[in-house]
Image 1 (cartoon, rainbow, N blue to C red):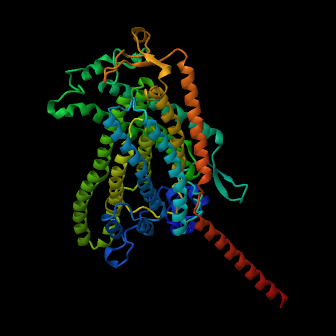
Image 2 (cartoon, rainbow, N blue to C red):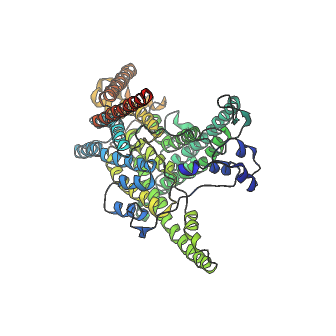
Image 3 (cartoon, rainbow, N blue to C red):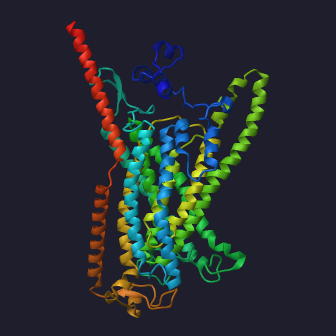
Length: 582
């Protein structure tokens, strides 16, 4: 693609092609960009190399190398698809390897919790697992920077910065540039501010729709109760909540049809999340296009910000409601497991099985088309038509799903200790399915050079920072803290139910009295939360400062390269001085 972008534009060629767009004829020096701006070129699709060529870097060779390995063969992927695609799989490999530590910690906590007869709400040692997960997440990010630097150096892309590429769709008034004196497109910043305002309003409306949908589905799942606290009664919908009452259609304790009906609300929840995300994806693309960013990188960053905010809200809002409004760790664990399991099955179905079926159907149509082309001596176009018939590969959705999965692991570690262990298994399946899509189903993406995972690194930083807050709050708002500071709590009484402080006196599961904070206990709990949060932040800063961003050997190679360049420059200057003396 880089070579194609360097093909210069020729005014006579554009005139011969009847290109009427003044922008296409004046503001770009690339023929590909000019044709794209003029609407005559939709996209550039690289064709696959022939499998019979003996070249090790064929698509089939990449898939064959991945069949019998647990992790992705990133070197083979980099040679054929480029470092931009390979960096995603390298990050997946690193993430899966690093999950071993919290997987072991969570499994040990789960086994001890079961043997001891505790639940996630009152197990006093679960806080140490959540503390470990937060510190693990920070260590993983810092170590990933080192692994990323090592791979980037090995792939000869270290320090590679993305070229400032102007979007072909960028619109603006033609004016003479003050920098180089040539024609350029200009769009005033105040007009883009109006586009930002529209994005905020539309996204806020969509977030409200997602919240209403979440409220209805939580009622359908039986999480909203009539005898709840005064604040929770606002979101109670009797018509929907009746479906989850004892003996009703979606009763969580029913055994009819092997208890499968109890999963219907969860499946509906995942379907609603998927449909809302799909709808907002189109809305976000429209909103970002209205903002009319000049550079492709700025356009992508704006799109990622919108979609991450909405999809993270859509996936996590029910969990945050159960965790911090209802403050019920058992319900939170149940909802986490249900959402996590159904969403994992959904990804396997929609991203692997369905595309494979579509590929088989497409192959049959291509065979018929190939026969027709042979009759007209146009069989040389078969490969191009096959490539165009395949769906376009988008790494964006794969990264988004993995980032959301990272949130499931680190944001609610206090309530789902087995999340890391299950994620190891799902990641192995995800790596295989993504490789299968890349090698067998989707178009070959245009190779691009990249030294990092880009803006996704910042998104992961946001999740890690948020995990400090969520895990500390989960600890101090649950009965785990009561096991360590029993003097701050008392048993619930009838007046607490009447005042809306608790939903009921006795705990639903164990039958023991529910606990409420004493009158002055809130101050001490706030102080504990404040102290824990700041201690964690300090630990995060220490870890980040203690782990270098690149390995020592990469630093040595950089110094050696800089020394070699300086020596060559000295040699060139000496030779030039000798020539001048003669």
